[in-house]
Amino acid sequence: MRERSALLAHLMGLTAALPASEPLAWRLCQATCRLVQADGGSIAVVATTGERTVVASTNTTATDLEHIHDDLGDGPAVVAIDVDDVVTAELARADPRWPQFSEVAARRTRAVTATAVPMHSGSAVLGTMLLHRTARGPLRAATQELMHLADVVAVAVVHEAREAAGATPASWDGRREINQAVGMVMAQLAVPAPDALAVLRAHAFALDEGLADVAAAVLARRLDFVPDVPP
Image (cartoon, rainbow, N blue to C red; front, side, top):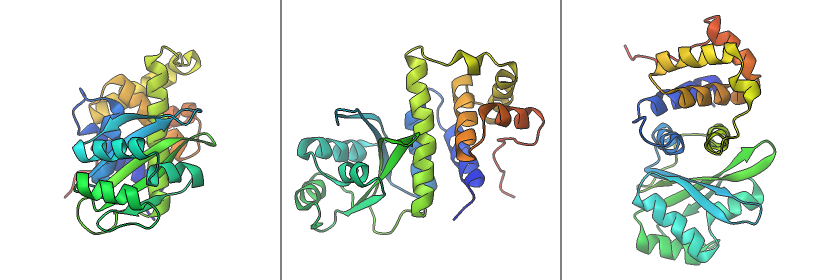
């Protein structure tokens, strides 16, 4: 399994290369797809009532798979939340676990597999990232890597939603060191301030460190997010 820091750096480099005009959740989902060689994906959050809300979808196949979940109330994304684990559905043939879902998905979409990965906010399951492939073959990531990527994306999605609602913690944004580190990450990745802050938060989560500690490492130049340039 790849180291968490390397996995995060690769994810953020791919995210930074996508158009900044797109929502952060969409860019993180698209970057994850590229990283694990999925042909598309979506992010859905689940309310305490069980209602699912799709917050990002990279293409029509991803959208259709989410609609099928909503129409049938069943499928890998539903089960992934219940069992809190990665669940993959075979769609090229009838999957005995979800015969109706696989039959409808095969008829309406080009996907041959759909992998649902639970996303966490703290200890609670926040929702799922649903990744599909249109050709046979596994995703290019181990189960633990998929779960780690989904949790990193969840951190960014949660904070983006809170900021949109005006609930940004003043104790974070008011810290001078964190603001300075945000500025450095903006320069390194050529991304706007909200994205740079999301990178710092995701890195803090990935390595189980405090945000202030990560900011201090950036300012001391012990940590940077400059994308690797291939030789």
